[in-house]
Length: 216
Length: 253
Image (cartoon, rainbow over all chains, first blue to last red; front, side):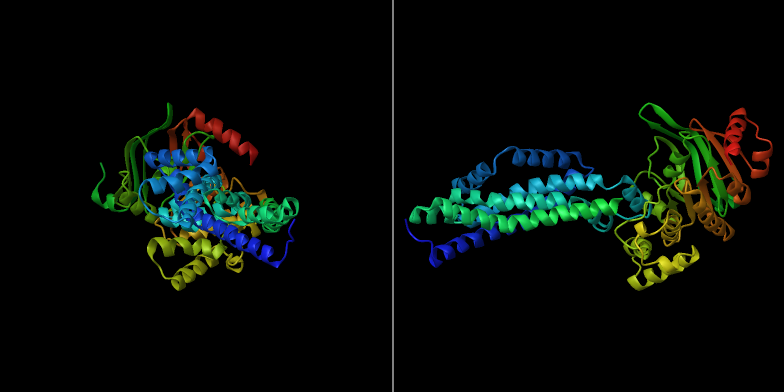
């Protein structure tokens, strides 16, 4: 058994950096495309609604691991040379946009009909109606679920290890293989995930309580 | 049918309007003309189509047959005609429908800025002017949830007035209010009427109807059953359905 010293710890921190970066990229990419998905999903256009419903169905109905595989090896099969970083970023963006799109669709539909009617009666057009009236309220409604998904996504980044990414979990595996101390190493890895995710979950449930109060 | 002088003062006209919800015939051959400055009270039992009728005027509902003209704009279902009509028509809802995430003043300034392209400073001036007019300027920076129902409804009236509409539609504006708040909203509406605003009000406030209405229209089962000046309408209604309705309404007030 080898010792777990500064070098090993720094290696884990390197892994943590990728975990956080992946989560951020997934969340930003997923957020931007997720809004688009949510808007198409709630639009008047039946084709747009059907296509986005299919998109959401596919990405919610298949494992993230498989999605990573398909994007990583699939893009390579097309003869396009992409590095792992871009492939994984694309896969996480696709995955997150489907989930966030569905969460936000529900929130948009949860905004009372009267809001749309009042906006219409005032003559507000689609862009202003959404940007100024519906989306601010919908995003507020969606906060607990959105944060919940962000926590899921953060933990889900461990799957990027499968395409050769040395993020936190993979880094832990490597250290564990070097030091033969799996329990200790994965204990530390688990604690690091917890330190990131717990405050997020906590913030989510606090928001939820505050909103329940405000709604009374 | 109409001579041209009369035509010019005509703000809204509905000709033979038909509306169905599925198989339910919600509006049956409704014809109605409203002159500039006229105040009309629409009443009738629930489900009689009175709300549906005024919601057709600003295209919140579509119609299957007939013709609606507002200030010379024919509602033909095109975005252009809907925009043109909504520019002339303000609406106040039963449940206020204020935007809860922005202040009373911001509720008033949003549409002038976005729809009419008014500058932020001018929109605020406009907003303050109309909040003052509904006597609620001191609450300008509060959020809707911090206001009472009566105050919220007055803000909603100010919000509609900020678009400087030619006609105001009121869809049961006092039905969701506690009794002690009804008066402040009705007083605001009476003030508007005195200033010459054209108004169509769906309401069961018969005192209000007596005081300001030029015509009271009674609807039942999607039809206009009877219309008359308030004096005549309340004293000597013609139809049995009107008599029954008035009997029920007045017994409670």
